[in-house]
Length: 151
Image (spheres, rainbow, N blue to C red):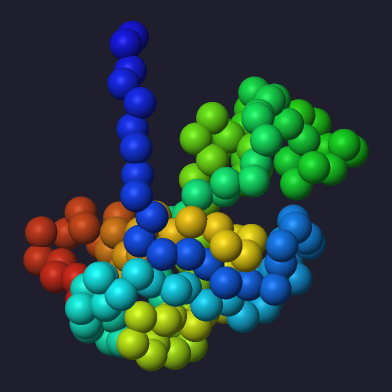
């Protein structure tokens, strides 16, 4: 297989109180701000109709990876393949987290639920939509009469 490298340009960055990895639960229960580059401010139009978003970011401080890891770094748990975990140390260190929108002001989105470090490059945001992002939505899509709600 001959795979070509892929390059992304960040759309902004994450601001959080965490410059170093910390307890994931503490991080997810804190407030973060997504600073969107002003050239994308218009693209935020309509996002206020949603309660949650998917935040896609580069885990730019992750160093290397191992194919087998202990889940949550807990050595008392058996190792498993890294693709069966949420370890930040990955071949392509991309983080995806569902975050709750608290406020949107111009090009800044204040959220909770995010586990990204301060100044992590922001690659994309998408509205969380049950019909795309949950098992219930996947099941509902089997019904030809199902029409998803958009925001």
